[in-house]
Image: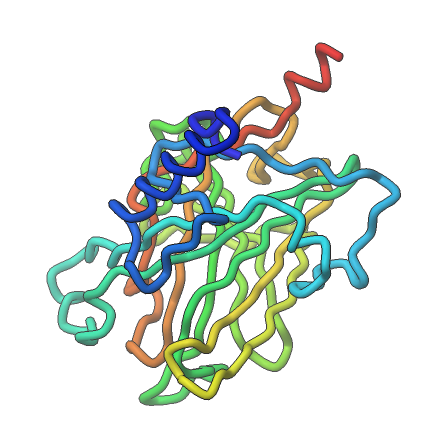
Length: 265
């Protein structure tokens, strides 16, 4: 839960609802979801070591119903060159809500995301593009650029899931535009499922990505620190989104890992 929602009872509910009304699309207002803006902090939920998902990255395990849910708004990524703007579909000009949850055990770190998508796009062809989602972590502080890092001294670690038959997840690093590289340790796993509804606009993707808690290299995010800056990106194939044409959080959300609490207990 965010640090600003510490109060309990009627006052806290009223504050949360007021914040949601001010920030969210009225059609998506839910008093059980906390609205998160860039710069806010969220706590990583701690799962008891005797609690397990049905499968490692199950996006529909009952445990997700028991953990805090957050919502943040994604906006079109700034084009890195004016010509990129020519590829923007009209639909991609709109913002989009992403719902997310974060949790850890003593051995593994999990992120669950879901978002509305009226169509399931699972292939890239000459004139169509697949859906996808990415989680980006700043490795050396929140003054890192959220646009793929700020050079070799301020890189980012990226977990990228794409909607294809192989359910492929890539563990990547970048230190600026055009520098994205695949890491030797491909230890991030993930599963995504698409849920069609009778009203297409209510259909959605649900994706879980996870990694062992211990990092394996200098370009992998370390969860052995009090706060980790994180950002999200979504590619919606039906809006012709691909590569740098995507929707993103425009700066960092801070994950409170609970490491300080553990070390002091």
